[in-house]
Length: 296
Image (cartoon, rainbow, N blue to C red; front, side):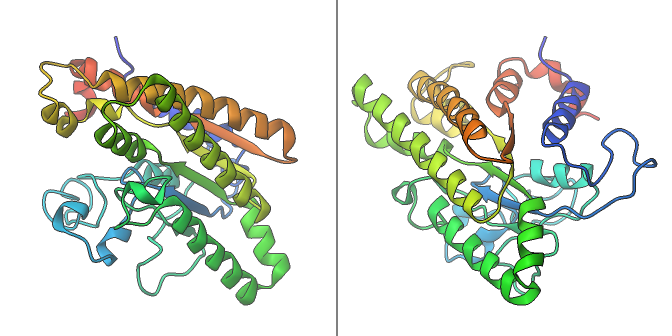
């Protein structure tokens, strides 16, 4: 049987605890005083808290209409969900407010910034209309410079080094590749995986040069099981696009190894990877096992 809601919460707590966040006790909040920890968030619609609201996009690329937001916020916030994002749950677990989107007017950097953009990929070509990972990195650099100007180098460096850097990206790249290169050879598929993992690794190393030390990473989910993809390929029952799944499984394995190698090379580097692929795949293949979550 697939994991229950209790198991998911346990995984989330382990995900946080493995980063060794000292600011709050994850087991007993009464024993330790709460201290501040910021989050800087990068990725696609899994993490987008509303940045796409501020871009000139079609309706399908936004989440600012019903039923988005109906079950928790009771209005659409720009999140691609009817409730909270995983990063919202993480913020709650460590006792912090939700992290605001970068493009929201008038935000400050006290709790960090959310740079994620629905539809974004590691590669700019995946969807030029939205904010690619490279563009998100440029936006982060602007924030880091602003923090240094406002707080001074010492305080800014302290906040940047104590922050958690959350990332979930790559799924859109694989969807784009499979759609545009349906006859790609195995060698071409493997080369694409290698290039994507290499770019992600470079992204993490670039953040490290700006003081990032704690990384919270969601691996790529089973994009080949998305309803839109299954419909476009005329799949039946619980069938999924196996080409996408195979590439993503290779990606997740290679990315995990690459990040582990960084841990051995970069002083103070800490990370945790949440197996988003397995959790979501289990839900898709055995939805009845999760009735207690969705009906609670």
